[in-house]
Structures are given as structure tokens and as C-alpha cells.
Image: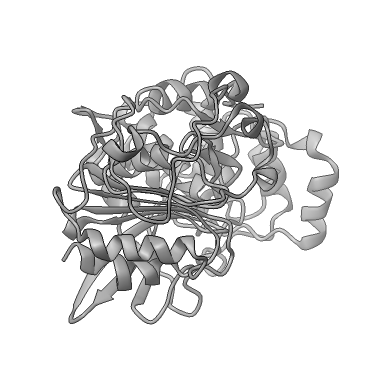
Length: 403
């Protein structure tokens, strides 16, 4: 299994007792301890994690020596009463199956809460939020000189040397990294062929995955290169990462991003290709999600080191294309102008007469890293609820606490 730590050894911690309540608690009141998974819970599948009997709500998150700056809600920003009320509603099940809600402001974690299957030390499935991490991994390769920003507009296959282009369908060269990162690669694989791929995963090892896609797709045209979410675009990007960096993509992501940000408690599964999954099947703790968000919010810098080019971050978290408002995941009446960057979504969040641009990593079931640059605000959510309204809740209930 790719990029997987020994979770049992990492999480062999004793259950710290019943330290949570439906009311907000301070660090002093709970001795700085948050709701943690015990050793038995640490080895369970996510669906088998028992629900917390009581929510854990903390308005002054503990300094866990994990490279995250912490502060106190109300003292360092935010309206404490408004956010505690929201957290109590979440705890009462009024907003769906939330597992965690964390809020950072001006670089400090000010609010931390866990519900249901959420635990402070337990990696949570990320679903498609994984795509945003894949995007940042490509950005890291550019920062280190294995690619350039100009390479984003070159044929993606030019970076893959184990392919036979004589067998490609017409138009294969039209797929660029820029197109793939914005979900506009243009592959058109029939349902029957997709099923065939599933029955013969051994034929998709390494770059054979790309060879198979480019042999069995319909021709790639300007018309086919319209926005189509997923559509094998993330694996194409991961293939380029693996091809250009020293060693493997697995080793690169671990040493050049996860280790540098102090993210050691995570899971990242392996795809049929043998590469890390690019579009789903990673798991991160909620605090690790804060770190990914800070990396993007800080224009690619971590602890003063430029890990990702600012120019790449600008493309990743801004609206390159408009995707429409008919089907906004987590949206509502105050969410509009949905768009897409480099595996990051965007939307305008309205409160009162003002509109605030947001960028977000999003995962099905309710995983979000929401960045609102104008307010220097970040909202982290994990959930297991397909019908969540997280962006609407952010606009309606969280924005006013910081305006």
C-alpha cells in the first residue's frame, strides 16, 4: 500500500476519558486534551468507528507541537458565541453528519470540534479532496525544477517516455497538464471499456495505464475538451509526477510535502497503476487538512520555505473556468459563480451586501478545505453526508463571525 504509515503504532494511545461536552470548553478546563481515538478504534475501517457520545468543542485549541500555531476564539478573532451556537447545532444533528469543524484565522487555529466519527488523531477519508493534494504535489515538482510553468501547456505525453504514440487516437497531443488540471483532458472512454479496464487491472501498471487510455478513447477534439469532472484527469497528472521526479511519486510526495509539513499520521492508497491514487482514497487528520490549507493560503510557503511556486498557487486556487451554478456541492442560496482552478473549486459566498471569493478542496461526503483570502480565514470540515450544505453554512453562519 502506497504512502501508508503504521497506524497501529502511531495511534496506540489510551482513551483519554470523557472530556467533551456540548458547551464550548477552554484549554484549561480540559487540560489541553481533545477527543482521541484509542488503540482499538485506530485499526477500524472508517465506517466501523463508533459515534462519539458527546461532541468535543474547543474555543482555544491545544498546542500539540505539530507545527500549527493556535489561538483563542474571540481573543484572536471571531465571534465566540456565534460559532459555539453553530457547533451546538451540529452536535445536535441539525446540519447533517459532521465529523469535524475547524477554523483558522490569520494563520492561527482558533476553533476545533469533533463529532460522530471524528477524532483529533484519526485520519479521515478525503475522497476527491485528494485531487487538491495531487495538484500541490505537481507544484512541488515545478518548484524543484523537474518541470516549469511553461511545461503546463506542453503535450502531457511528452513527459512519458514509455509510450507508443503510433497507437494513440487522434488528438492525444491536445491533452496538456493545464487541460488535465482543469478537468478538460477530453478523454472519452465508453462504459464497456471502463468495465474492461476493471477486469484487467494488470494491464494498467505504470505508464501502460496512459497507453490504454490513449488507445481506447474516442478522438480528442476541442469539443471533447470541455469540463468533465474526474474523467481520468487526476491519474494523468500523477503519471507525470512519477515520470519527472527522482525515485517514485510515492517517495516524492512523502519526502517533499508530507514530511516537510510534519504530516506523519495519514493513509494514501495505491492505484491499479502502482502509483498513489490521484483523485481519491487518501486519508488525513483534520489538523493535517489545516496544513494543506495554510500552504495554499500562504502562496506556497511553509515555515518560510517556498515549497510551491506562487504562480502555480495563483492558478490552482483561482477561477480559471466557470462551471455553472446548477449543481454546486455543498451550496445554497448564498453560494454562486462556481468555478475551477487546478483541482480546486471556487465560489462566491454572499453575506449581506458583500460577496467573498472562496477556493476549496472538496471531497464527496463532506470534506472541505475552504479558503477566504479577503478575511484571512480557513474553514475545515469532515463529514459523512452526501447532502451537506457546507458552503452555504460557511456563508450564512461563519462569515459573519469574522466580518
